[in-house]
Image 1 (cartoon, rainbow, N blue to C red):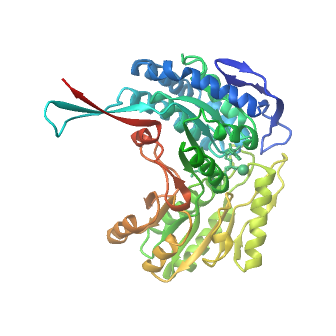
Image 2: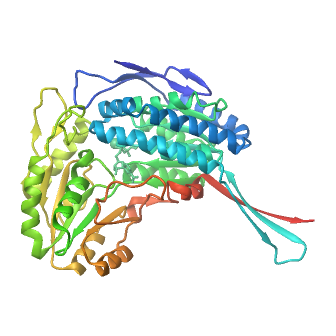
Image 3: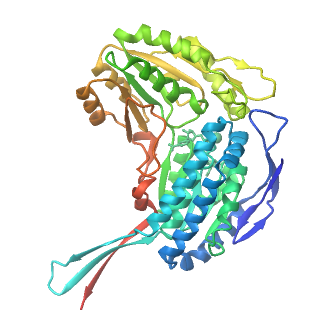
Length: 478
Ligand code: NAD
Ligand code: MN
């Protein structure tokens, strides 16, 4: 079951400069693929191919774009079980989560297939007599898409689909931990009837392939999702080149639980948001801020629920929490557990590296009671580690929720319409959830954050056109 994954450049499958092996985080004895790894030169080939296809794809009809994207979406949906298995094998989320993600990728392609039919403009009368003004949207050109490992189908889909729908050509670089999923997506796209060069896949390291995309002056726009540190580097180069750029970075998302919250539902939201997908979600609820009167009861309920979560092989039917994605990520999680203890945060449960029948990166979900200034309560860990923080009252909880350099998603559990309304208004985040986990978003509405979490226009839904198109204003005198 070892796949061989090649680069896709200018309509051809090509070997790379070196070969990588993609591992299964649940089972070291089950490698997923041998994959091509490119360098800067091969990346430049892909960018040139995308530049060469600019005109023909920009001039394609909405019908042609619809047909191509609808083909991709239809095939992904028809194969969602198989694709979900691949995703669970390579990234380590559980099979139901992985099938759900594959289906979401299919729905995203279908959504943007239809968006290609709806690209509109405006027509206004000029303030001067006898003149008409048209406002139209044009493709940006060549877009470089750089993605992280944690949603290997959904994030590439929500970049590739709008890029192509709005008439851009693409160079796509998946994360090195999940090349097989990126290649699988490319394999489907390669049969969708696009002109050669309109879509290109280059696998390889961030240093070589990623940087070559960012540095290439033929790239007109860069959409990056990943860590804040790399995002800053990308932004620096992009701003020197005055290239359009969109960054989605980390989070340290608060979930506020008020005294009047529906209690069991709040526990569900916290468990789901903190630990599902092994906590490896930028929208994970990593700061659970609980109002004092229910604090002890909430901690007890969380301890019991957290300790009962079954951690194991991503494909096992009784697994609730899959493995950590890699050895390095596991080391980072363990380092933060150590930092938490050293700083005086109180470990409530979990945080043990687990042995399972297969050799994988298993960590039991960990829960701290932390102070707001603890590093485990401030820095993104990106693993199954969450903090509970005590708040005196609602105002205090809101202040704690906003006391973070990040601003992706914020949640509140309460029965009070007044509090929920106030929180929606004053939470400093791009997305707000009321009586819902912070993670788990729809595919047809904008996604993104504020402060250190995001830069540039929103992704997803029709708001994606802000990034993937340029506005032109034309004046005509008859
Ligand atoms: P990462 O920043 O290490 O890598 C992201 C991508 O950038 C990868 O494809 C990587 O190869 C590439 N890259 C690395 N160095 C580069 C460079 N110098 N130039 C250009 N590209 C480079 O992130 P990761 O470890 O893959 O993913 C985890 C991070 O992603 C977490 O911080 C998480 O919060 C974030 N994330 C954010 C969102 C969001 O939408 N806000 C979604 C998912 C993940
Ligand atoms: Mn990384």
